[in-house]
Image (cartoon, rainbow, N blue to C red; front, side, top):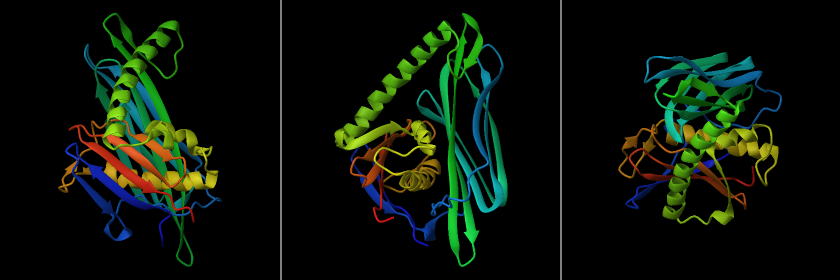
Length: 293
């Protein structure tokens, strides 16, 4: 079964050392997301990502519940959900669940934190569907949630998803400004490091890709958008979620890495995935879009 996408992954260190790697199905780990053509007759019955503050553990810490649930509505040969949690633009945690011959997946994690922060979680829900005559198709969807937490000695612990008061608006503006400034510096450095001509691309942070779960990406049909997004998450899982390889083959955890910037070429030939690891290494993934598919 041919893939919809071919992944050419470029890992580049700050020292400019680089390594190209090609992945095919023979070297995949068992628990792996593989994109197959979308079955238009199968859609997820429900898919949710939920962030909720639970309690203040003491004067310095509080806990957040992070839940990821999905129901396809039918048993699939393979079901997998993955989720990424970012705090103020840096990866704080990741969740993954993989099951055969299953319909419903449920995941939950309790996250401990201190100080105010903006939390964003984006999830990819996937099903691999097997039919007679070796026909394999898939179903997919995404979900997203965010939570602002205000932990200040001047007021009780507070959280909100969207501002409800004037003070909420002020707090949101403060947190967003700090995160945006940090991301602008990181993304500017990545773009400069890889010598990218930004006027040739549409750009968005990874957390905004869920906006295109029901609408097409710029310049693409909805069908093509689903193909590109499915291929993107396949690459994210193998080359980011499971760990980021460097030129020497060493694997660095993605935890602490920057919120990835997605750049989609305006000629629809490829997209770029840019992030900075916790150790400060610049990383670029290149995904080519097959125009014949």
